[in-house]
Image (cartoon, rainbow, N blue to C red; front, side, top):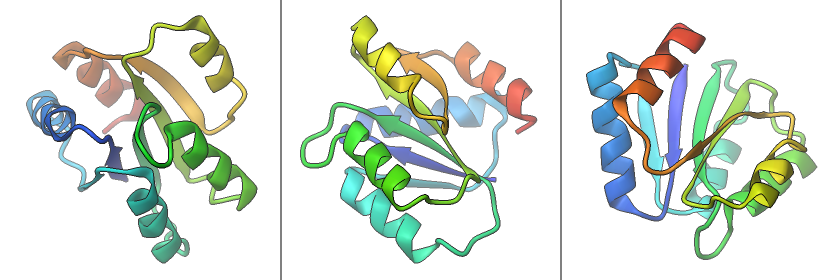
Length: 126
């Protein structure tokens, strides 16, 4: 499994990497500071048979996380890609909206902790 981190805040990406390391998650990680770069990577690697887990911020300049999800759905990108939403939003409407996307497997509100990543490791046998 490859892990993709998509967030416009480099501090959040660094924190995610550190927490994964501390939780014992050692899968390869690719990080992107915008949705466009993440979609470009996915387009270039569309033929991969490897599972992908994307941590996706929904509030980003340019393409939002919602825009990224809509493009993935419109191109019917591989079902091997699962998404965990990462957001600072506490709006219940965002959580309800996330439920409409079948590839979203979880919804995390920042800040997250080491325990979140330990539970992730156990849930996905990472």
